[in-house]
Structure formats: structure tokens, C-alpha cells
Image 1: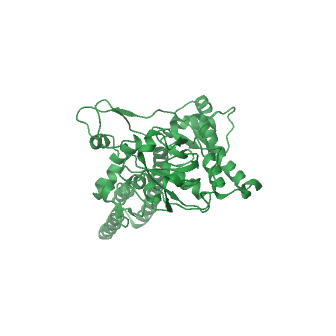
Image 2: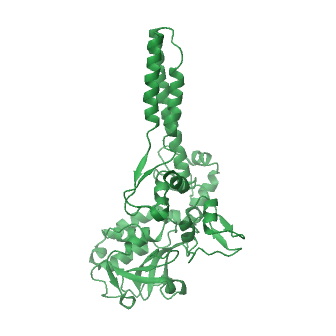
Image 3: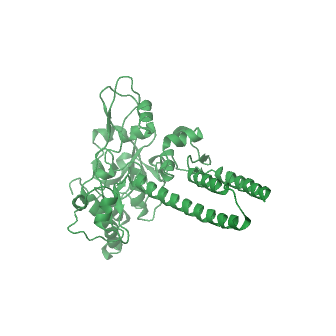
Amino acid sequence: MKKLSLLTLVFVLFILTSGASAKVTYTVKKGDNLYDIAKKFHVSTKDLEKANKVGAKNLKPGTKLVIPGKNSRIEKANKKSVQESAEPAVSSKPLAGKTAAIRTTDAQTLKAEDKGAAETTKTSSDSGKYHTVRKGDTLKGIARKYSVSASDIKALNGLKSAKLRTGQKLMVRQAGPRTYAVRKGDTLTKIAKKFDMDADDLMEINELPSPSLKVGQKLYLDEKQDVVNVDQKYLIMANNIEAEIKKVSESADFAEMTTQDKLVVFARKLLNIPYKFGGNTILGIDCSAYVKKVYGLLGVELPRTAREQFNEGQQIAKEELSIGDLVFFKTYASFPSHVGIYLGNNLFIHASSKGKKVTINSLDTPYYFKRFIGAKRLISGAGENDLASADPSS
């Protein structure tokens, strides 16, 4: 009987060791970057680079990346299972009962750990800043979960009562962006490494023309317009904007509009939503995601990045610009790194890290005038007429 128990234990150890060694991998696709992949799997860019000995410069489609730290919970559960299985058995009947108990306990443990991991992931992904109301949620319960007061949540979201609706997005915590003052001997790479960031991200967030820094220079370590640092009107707008777009697109007047006019309607419906580096939702969006979303509402699918979008459509001279054309700029890198949509009258609409939101600027603004590198036309009929109503104050 002891021999049988020993053989059983060896077999269990073999199976569990095999399971624990399984690694989670991801195959890089066109348009992917380390920041987005790390965010998708809830790991840091630094850990992803270290585990695969790869950087932003040499990331290629087809590369298989190992996602670090994704089998730790399985290993933990397996270790517990092995310890339980190693306990001596008095007879075959108790052993059978014990095995069943082990299976039940192990399944419960793994389930509990997975649930805990899911909660942690949720918290880390939205950093405790927003909460989507679920069935059964109460204002007091949500406040308790995020260690804030119910009155604070009401104030942040402009709520007049404690009544909530399922699916409603609530701001639960508000905080300003982190900054860092450059010191003697600092480099962009050193600062990025110190705060577990990517140097390219740091350049884009701060719209740096080059990696050169000055002592005393203030750098933003988070997006200048962090999604939690917005006025409560943005949250209210986010809850209603999709419905507004749907209503407009189904109206009789909309059906009679030209393609350019439809594009401007959609573009302006998203005016003033907050900028968020890497963001692609109404609660926070970056320049290329904004352009992709607006064109997507017209049924035109675009790549995710400004660099890729620059390869789409027909090249247009600056003096031939018309409504709906994409305008491109070099900001933090040598390649196209910023994009907007031309509105006419030398104005364009874009998600601006500098303006902290989707806004309208003139191409003659010194910052954009110096960095303009070209334009692309994606929709037929452009060049018919400009909209005189497209002005920054409207």
C-alpha cells in the first residue's frame, strides 16, 4: 500500500510540474507595441522587455513574446495540492475520501485565487479611478470598496441622489498628474527606467522634440490629462455621447448630408473629451485612436497608430487641403507621431496632449506649423467646399 501511495505521489508531482511549466505567450501583430501588449496582460513594459530581451525598436510582427508572471497562481495552487497529497494514508477508503477532499479544496483554492486576481487586475487597470455600476451596487457599497465617501462620489459625478443604474460609469477618485524635475546627470532613459516607463512614451507625453533635457525642466510622468483629472462634465458627457451619435446618425437630415459634413458632425460630437496617451475610449483617447474612431463611425477602418495611418489614402499638398483630410505632424519622433482631421479655414480637430482634450487648432499655430509633414485624403468628394462654421469657439 505504501508503494502504491508513493507511485501515486510521483505521478501527481509529474503532472503538476508539467502544468506549472506552461507559459503564456503572445504573437506580435502588425501595429502592436510593448506598451499596449503590457497593458493587455496587466504587466509592466519593463518586465515584458526583460523577459523577452526585446525593446520598442526591434519589436516585429510574428515575434512570440513570453508574458512574465502569468503562471504563478497555478504554481501556488499546485504546491498546495502536492502538500495535501503528501499526507500519509491509513487505509484505502480514507485515502479515497482524502483525494476527493484535496480535489475540492484545490479547485476552491484556485477559484478563489483567480477571483482575487481578477479583482486586482480590475483595480490596477482603472487604478481605482472609475467604477462601472453592476446589478446590486449601492453608492455606499462602492464608496466603501474604494475607501472614499459617498458624498465625494456624488460630487464628482454630479449626482443629485443615491440612485444608480446598471452600466453607469462613476468617477470614484480624483488625483493630479505626477511630475518630475530634471536633475544634473539625468537622461531621458534614466528617468524612464526610474519610474518604470518607456523612454518613447515619456517623450510623447511631454511632446519633446528631442531626448535632450535641461536641469530643472518639469516632466509629466503620467498623461498631462489623466482621465481622473477631468471635470465631472466629461463623465456625464461620456455616459450620453454614444446615444447622441446614434440619434444623429439615424436622423433624416443626416442622411442628406455630404460625406464631409457627416465626418465633421461625428468629429465635433467628440469635442472636449479628455486626452489620454494610449487611450481609445470616450473617457480618454489619444490622437490616432480619435481619428480611427471618427472614421470608423463612417465605416472606414484605419490602422491604430499615426505612423500607420500616414501610409493610407492619397497624398495631398497643404494648399489643396479640404474637409476630412488627415493632417500629420512630427512631434516627439522622426516619424509621423501626431494626426488630426482638417475642418476647413486652416483649422483641424485632434486629441491633443498639449490641450489636454479633443480640441480645434490652427495649422498656423507655431508649434504645429513647424511640425507639419503632410496630409492624406481618405474619402471621395473632398475638395467640394469648406465649412465656414468650423471655428475653435463654436
